[in-house]
Length: 315
View: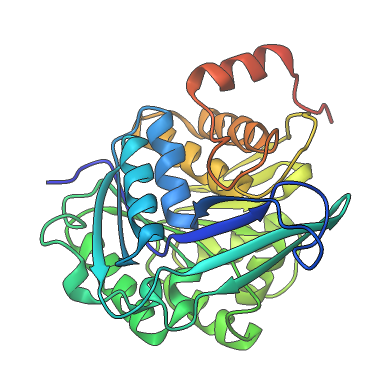
């Protein structure tokens, strides 16, 4: 049995510049990892949710580092070790102040080779919430088939299916992304999307219009993430606008995953829509206050301190 939140997707190693300057001129670097689904699992676990991550890594130092670190965050890990493909890699440097450059080396690597036999029997079927993203759909046809089958199995077993469009333009065309997104919108229960991502699936519009179209496709809960402008949600016909929290931004990477993980953690805890969104907005803001894909995911104490000391933007 798994229970709680179950995620399936790629985690990849990260090599990042530790000071300003591109890697063509600067050699100082650090090592970490990232990945939308594992980030969401870590964010939820830090807020007290039972979370599980399923993935595939290479038989290498990066793969071992990733699985050890995710387990260290209290997330249950089911990671297949691929003997024939390395762990995927992203390289991030900062050529100048205010500019970040990210390059991915992921095609054909372990995460994209996830297969149905990598999904442990009964784990997705035992989930309360099953979560995946558009990245898993874009990595490879095999990855897409695997996560879609897992999502449908989870839903058939009574789980809530959560989907974050999480579009990556370097992985596929906008046309392919839109088609794949629409396939998932027909059966997902909870959908997260930026307004630009949602437009790929249902056409341009206001946040409310986007949410209404996604809901009409089948989703019970739709959350349109608006970054510095907060979020708009539509759940069972009830609309809610969530203002953002003011923070000094160091790095926005991981903020969307923090938002989603916090929302799902509160969903598991039985919180109402307003509480889910407020916690999610605070978590996203907390994640912006430092560097890293997952390192700044907040605890409940972090969120309480932010809420107590940083009022949301008034409108």
